[in-house]
Image (tube, rainbow, N blue to C red; front, side):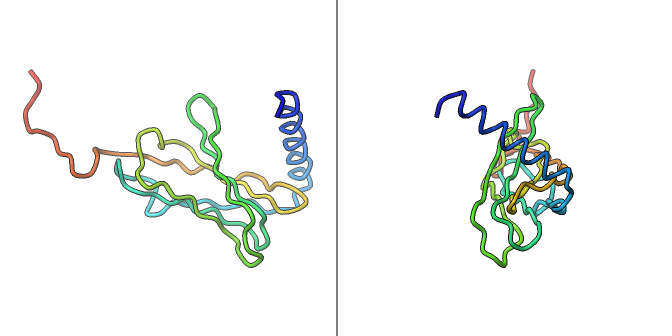
Length: 135
């Protein structure tokens, strides 16, 4: 896809989201993390995004310190589903940060959820400090 077409598509999607958000027709999604928001390094975490029944797609967005968004999408939910799960098998320090959800339900996108902050703590499972102090 050409850079101009990609830019145009992005602008159209942003405009559609802005217009729909101004209408206020869709409720904000909620976000949670299992087993919690403080995860030991190397352990799994699952983000749960929830919205109304009939959502077509959910997007999980991560905002890092440079304001760059990573996005993870789940499309074509069943007609009776109202949530999506995003799983990370083994968290690293790079997974720490602010996460939020948004969903698409025709004819447009919802507002974003509140931010959820994921903290990654400690050392990799199975590794321990040597017990010796550095000189």
